Length: 221
Image 1 (spheres, rainbow, N blue to C red):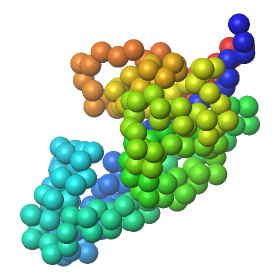
Image 2 (cartoon, rainbow, N blue to C red; image 1 turned 30 degrees about the horizontal axis):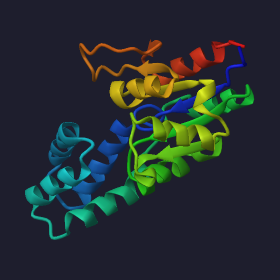
Image 3 (cartoon, rainbow, N blue to C red; image 1 turned 60 degrees about the vertical axis):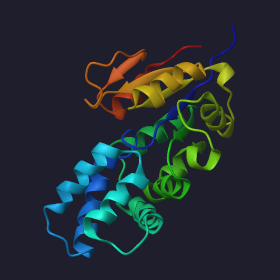
């Protein structure tokens, strides 16, 4: 049996970066700039929860509620430009990734989303300097849980799915089911958003720092 490679792929939103807090910051900024009532922040947050990831639908509802002149595409483009400025990594993420790479791991990000938005997040947070490769669905024309997006990410990390590895994420379908399809072991970050759902993750944790500790402890030859 050959040596199993040390490949760790990570989801981005709500795994490495706190998208909930970032969205609330964006919503507060949007409300202030549009001179809306402060309680509209809560409405935007609730709408985001209800329609995510359908950003076209989100901004169609926003445009209608506030009688905005800009078309949906323009509102979405402005959102994608601003969101990377509001995103922060969860505590311990940057140091954790640096430690994994120092231990010889190939580290990558595999994420669904629009390329400008997702790549902007990677650059603004400093994550881009701590990974070996990434694959963004909007740039590749394929989405998780499809195997091919994981293949692209692995290849850009100088690895191959044939030699195994790990996937870490918060979405039971995109990340955990996708990992199984790709032949990867998986760590599910359970944030309480999938109550009662069965899963096939190898490990379940409450945050990404716990997941990184599991990877560091993985001493398989």
